[in-house]
Length: 114
Length: 111
Image (cartoon, rainbow over the protein chains, first blue to last red):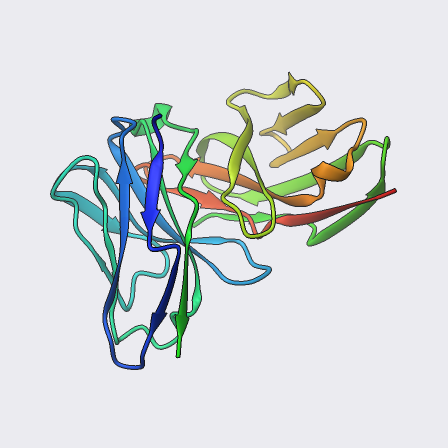
């Protein structure tokens, strides 16, 4: 079945560590996104990519990094520079361009700093 | 820049009709979308308005008025399973495909 797979579902990070969240899609979508959601809050855009080997910062990119070496993969690294990383992270994809107004989300990854 | 405003909470009873409003400030956008998110789950697409007017999909309808910078999601014949958070979202003109979400409205459906 087509969809977006995020892993791991739950992740614990120690202070000062970098961690990488995986996102894979088999929908053949050009565009991919990473959002952060804090409890009871909306979705804030971290990074997005419209095409392979290209990505742009969203509204809260500081302390995060991404890569887009393959169309189906868009991993997010939460670096030690992100001082408050505990949150729910959602990866999403869409057809791309201005016609891709429907985006499809993965099941999310919960990151907790211990 | 863009911003979208929604009420933070709405409560209604089973079988009722509820309207969730979304007002926005943006220099231009392609359309207004609505997403539903249950606790701990992923948001799922509900509806999209590219043009002014009403779009109906079963019990859910969505409305857009660009002249009023306003849209709403209408849920009819409410069911307990409709208890969730609802988000409006826009993709701005010249924004390179960036999709921006409102803060979300938590709907509680009571028996």
